[in-house]
Picture (tube, rainbow, N blue to C red):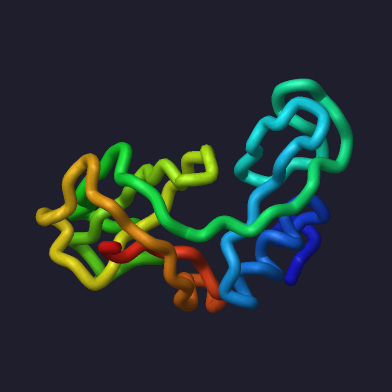
Length: 130
């Protein structure tokens, strides 16, 4: 892995969690802000080193878009649905949904996280219907 690729020091525990089947996020003990994507400072109050927490991996689809012309990393996989998911712990993340027809996903659907190898071969969070 080259120096300009992930994981970086802020995200390494996140990717270690993915490898262990955990969806990790950060939580600021100073102001109670939930932080995702991982950062070394709280995005609200600036406190250093927010705590790590593990999500239960369940949430609600906030937005969905079906991709019909995939970029090279996903060649041959289209169509597929890209989601914004509001996790129950209070953060929003983007990923794909699998194990369902892309056009059948709707805003408000409940989903849960699962981990599969991503295009770079690392375990990556995806969603499936709950």
